[in-house]
Length: 78
Length: 379
Image (tube, rainbow over all chains, first blue to last red; front, top):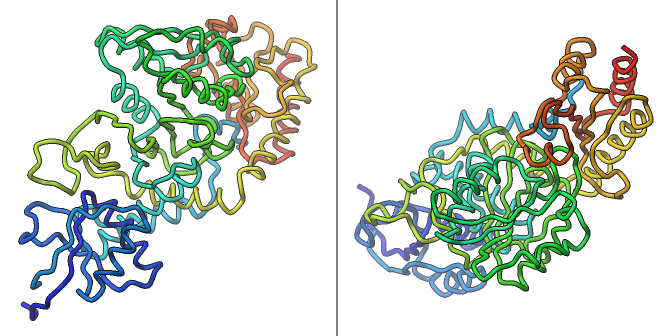
């Protein structure tokens, strides 16, 4: 397995909300990508957005601007 | 072949639609079921289609757009998802069976009651008859935007205002008008817009859906896997997954997205203007012919691009068949799934031959159809 890194993970109540965030992040130039929701955060399925922890403020700002609700914002080794 | 059955499905589509579907079939994984490139590509395309639809209907949030197999499924979802036992619902005699049959079913299964505005009442500017139908248990008003038989338009701005004033939900069947006439969920105060993808949105058959006002909870028609919240015993409460159980038709939606982009590029006024010009040309070519009966109000400046007619007492099916066999002209005959309107028009037995036009049609095609009708009327 690849080396683990400390990552910021945003989870959403729906995959559509995750898609909406990805689109907004791309438009705003916020680097990150969609990944399967890590089971350490939530068992089940769905998509989460993975970013560098330093992007937390920018991500929170983007969520607010877009009127998108994150289910959770986590920092984990991934 | 001359195709005049746009109101049934748009056979004439922008080439980008078929190309998008073919590309999707070769490249899409299951949307919402994976985080690898093929799945995300599908999911992004579906999301972009939601964005385009939200913009088309001025629905404030793309997440409020839920896909369904067609307008009928969307209407069933909307009606069965908001109407409770004992509720009263108001509709019109213009409706397609996609509205009437679920309503009749609700009357049986949930002991609901129904008031049906006559075609004349439904088409009156300002819909003055609607307010008088409201009772204490009236839950909703559901209507088509345009008659699929005559093309006559309902004053939806007035309907929305009346519904808002009386606390009713306003459900719009936009099967005949989405992609041609402006529909504004905010200004028209529409709670749910039900649309089909395969008519004037130029998508493939098997696409459609509903745009639901934010904050309005619609009980799902079906439940199942959504690609999220695996361990919850219930459907996710959030839109659109709340109403989208099972794998959605992402290949079809890719085509629908291409159709929506085409519409945005051309613009509704241009599309409508071209259709209207062709419809008027046909109407003017046949209206004065002996033995021709035309249905609907052509004195209105704006109407859906439909001309339904009969030749004398001839069976509409025979006329439509002759148009197809002798002239290569595709029309729809019979009852058009609108039983109450045919009853009002007195055409239950005869039906009507419906010509419905696309902006892809040409004036030469219209002139050929006028000649064909003249020829048949002489026989």
